[in-house]
Length: 152
Image 1 (tube, helix red, strand yellow):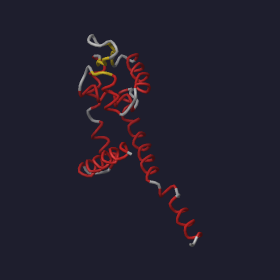
Image 2 (cartoon, rainbow, N blue to C red):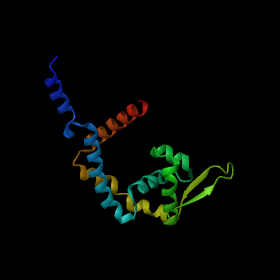
Image 3 (cartoon, one colour):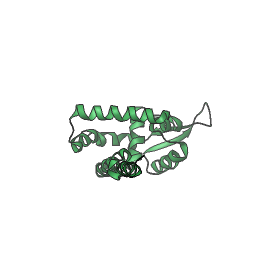
Image 4 (tube, rainbow, N blue to C red):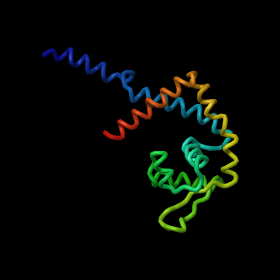
């Protein structure tokens, strides 16, 4: 057995630039940098933007519904929602049917941000320098990857 050849192969496999996770991580950092610029006009952070996307899709949902959509637990989501409530973007209310459930509703201010956010998806596509087809294919591949990793 050639140990030096195995060590050499292991060394190559452990190079930072060979790591899939680093490519994904660094792309995410670059993407978040673009989002930070675009979301400044809305005075939103990226996690707040994700919450707003869920609520613009369907208002008056539970905290657990938001958490499921965003793959976040309530311990992460609750402080975020409290900050958004303080900013006047949403309200948190106990469910009349089940007091253990907290319903999240947009305020008028939260609903009005939707108009300002309308250009963000096109701006992200433009920043990516991908075609709409390439961008869609990449999104589907990442969703497939997420699904596989979630099962592991």
